[in-house]
Length: 228
Image (cartoon, rainbow, N blue to C red; front, top):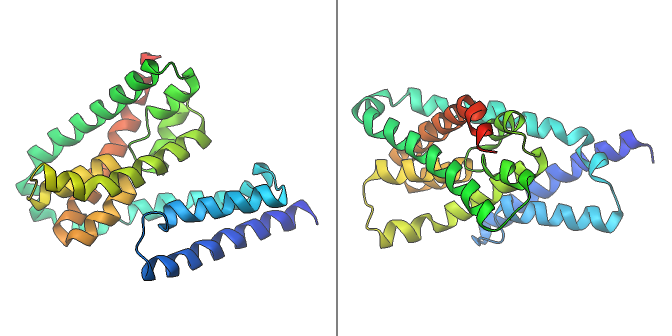
């Protein structure tokens, strides 16, 4: 089979597995069965079983990564429709986003050094708390490995989304704006999806915070590079 056919088959396989996974997840709401978790696991097993290289797999699938950009920008629509809510809380949201970015970067780098992880892992972890399109853009300036960055972003998003309800309950966080901001800042896309499940206000705030955190991190990337 030619490399072009392998690339195309991998693209079709990815879409089909994801579609089936979404149908399964609608019926059985389990953390393990989440598309962000289960689909990559299935694809990894299939690639290892069929001995398909990463280069062959990503050949045509890079278009799916490119589509993350327009998908992220689509979150701006509900934000625009709720400008009144943003105006009422702009100061607290702005301060919260900036604090979240600084804490995320410094805590990631500090923990990586505490466990004596390789410098490439440190650089990749530094931008793990923003959504994938922004993280990949920031990683180019920071010097992170794109594959590692994408992996760390997914793990961060899934973990933050899973821990959200637990933390809100035990920290007695009840305000919708606070919940949305927390999920958007800590868990980007996955957290925003969870925020919309909690309510429209939570979802709007999470969308805004996710985009602002990504933009600020990309703008600060040259300064983040100085940490290494």
